[in-house]
Amino acid sequence: MVESDAVRVLVAGGGPAGMATALFLIEHGVPVLLFERGEGPHADPRAATYHPPTLEMLERSGVTAELHERGIIARRWQYRDRREGLVAEFDLQSLADDTRYPYRLQCEQHKLVGMMERRVAASPLARILHGVEVIAVTQHAEGVEVGVQHANGRSDQFDGRWLVGADGGRSVVRKSQNIDFRGFTWPERFLVITTTFDFETLGFAYSSYTMDPQEWAATFKVPGDGRGIWRCVFPTRPEEQESDLLDFEQAKARLAAFVPESRQGQVIHINLYAVHQRVAETYRRGRVLLVGDAAHVNNPLGGMGLNFGIHDAYSLADCLGCIWQGANDALLDRYDRQRRDVAERYLQAQTISNKKTLEESDPQRRAMQQAEMRAMAADAAEARRYLLRTSMIEGLRTAATIT
Ligand SMILES: Cc1cc2nc3c(=O)[nH]c(=O)nc-3n(C[C@H](O)[C@H](O)[C@H](O)COP(=O)(O)OP(=O)(O)OC[C@H]3O[C@@H](n4cnc5c(N)ncnc54)[C@H](O)[C@@H]3O)c2cc1C
Image 1 (cartoon, rainbow, N blue to C red):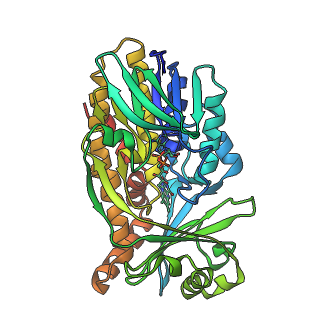
Image 2 (tube, protein in one colour):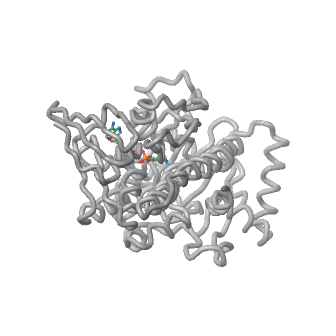
Image 3 (cartoon, rainbow, N blue to C red):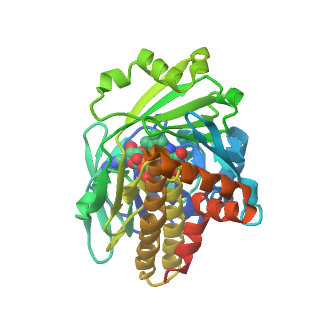
């Protein structure tokens, strides 16, 4: 059966990028039907850092205010050296003239998705279907038709005017349009160990990156049940077995080798992730658009992937809102040019550079990098320039200049 009510936008995927797309579309008065194959937000530990522009975009819906109630403000972040300790500390107050939110806000991704979902579900313009997987896409001059499978195995079809693929890195929507996903996969996987040990007692900022040629670490605090817990991300060697990496005793030992005092805390989760750097060859094929991880994937160092997906959603919803009011759909080609360009120039470049900095093995180059960081952190104008880039403000300003 085809459910035909084509005057709406279909969204495949209710993760951060899909839910943000739906939220921003209803702010523009555009009707939305969203399909999510899961029954609710995935609670595995993934993103948790929101940069200033993301907080500005989520302001109107009230999500930013709720994030402030439930999250942790990280005004400073650090570069550290595994042997030497603190290298440089950056204070985001340097951006006070550039943004209303001169800090990072840290709160688990699934809580953010829940906040957006409640607002979308409350809108008469939106409908969310859970337990519904998009499996096929066809498009014609006037619209798009998607084939879905319900959790009970039943099949259905739905019509819409446009389809947004927000269905993550393995996007069925992207594959249905034969859109190449160019880039590479790192040989090592990343291990995320969550602990109750409070790294602040050792002088760690709520977000810290520790350099080391053998085993770097990224540590950051998230609210957890309210008392605060810490996530530690480590690289692994390709030959390490998954069963060893996911073993609690081995995880405790890895953490203790990094910070011996961590034995005072409890390891509460261990997760292992494959890490990719890829960008779709186009974000638009006719009436099918891509946002979020469906369009680009990157390593998590710098906390940019989810934020970038929300910025895609904001930009795309703005274009579709104008098209709903009668604008030419060539706006969507501009969406592709702007967002894809900055995905390559900022998201990919910055996250690859962050990883290389942390793992630099040449002692001279490492010493030089550390000296540069200290000098940057000590010079207000230089610090501001660097923070504009790492806080994702520069990329958005650049995107706005692309015609
Ligand atoms: C360890 C780790 C740490 C990270 N830290 C950060 C960070 O601090 N900051 C940051 O910005 N990013 C971070 N990221 C990246 C971030 O988690 C992702 O960029 C983000 O989840 C992408 O959101 P998305 O909505 O595009 O995709 P996803 O989160 O993958 O969501 C896709 C959704 O679509 C659904 N779906 C999939 N296929 C279908 C289908 N066919 N039909 C219907 N539904 C479907 C899925 O169930 C899912 O809900 C991190 C990632 C990892 C792995």
